[in-house]
Image 1 (cartoon, rainbow, N blue to C red):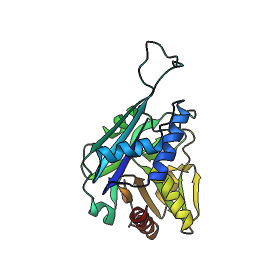
Image 2: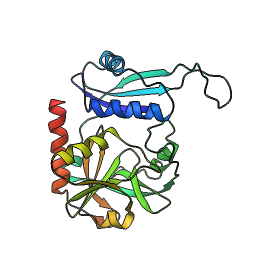
Image 3: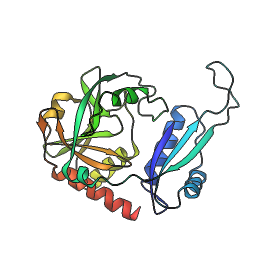
Image 4: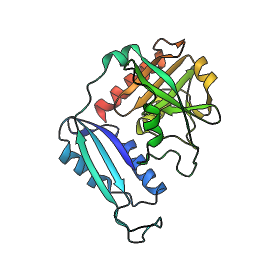
Length: 246
């Protein structure tokens, strides 16, 4: 499994949720979760300034076959990459997205985990090459929207914030969980539920989140157009405020 973490000035942004999700995913995959202090020290070593850090945890070396060795020692890789340039226009004006043709397979036992098997996301991302399209949205076989290829999805309808139920498929992002927490603390009702595509298209606002982009309003999906709305703007401000003091 892996986590992608934004580091600014040597500070791990959204640290609490990244490590919660790291431990949860390790437990789900029956891996021994690494000590937070050890990983934080490794991140500080490779990313003393601004960086994107990827933390990868695997089961470690083993022989042939599918059985999990009783004495398996997990392997951990902590690598730093240049921090991406902030995309001000997309934050301000919103982004164009498309609905991907690929349909996510359901596997409740693994749902939510950010495993290294991201083949569905890779194939979905290969469906377009137009640089004007910032993200592709993925759905399940039941006709519900689930997530972006590299982001989590939120809609706003009647003042209520909703994000898809990821108990069957999809990835629970650290930023998704922080946004749910911050939005609730700010007085928003935030629900986790199935979101059919027609409800998404009828929503007052749609926005995307991940640890590198923060929150991007969705400006268009097919023929549907949205103006960046007040909830997405508030979420952007909440993330910025939390990053400043986290």
